[in-house]
Length: 148
Image (cartoon, rainbow, N blue to C red):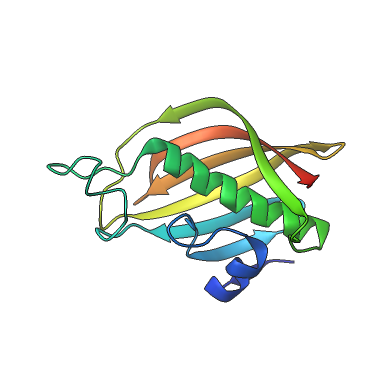
């Protein structure tokens, strides 16, 4: 089963809100397998005035964070549940992160995240961020869901 998600459904699956919500739409989600999500990068992003005013570039850590947010949606879709007020989905590790090209205002980031493994509540994902078919960043992400 493959489905797309608009921003309203994305907001149901993530606790993040402006200015830290980094997923605009999900193009495809296949539970237990993969998610394809997008972020439209605008000059109005709150980080651009300080990173770098003369040549705005989206911070790489935020590209990785956006991949983790896509991974969280995939986790919740796979588990068939939504986040609750007494749970937190933690980003606990990053392996093999690589940045291949800068992300600038006007770019559209496409994230493809697949499940590498899920054991005892620890999830490992393989993530890739692309702009116009070129890899901007890639990483292996480790996440876990915990109750407060």
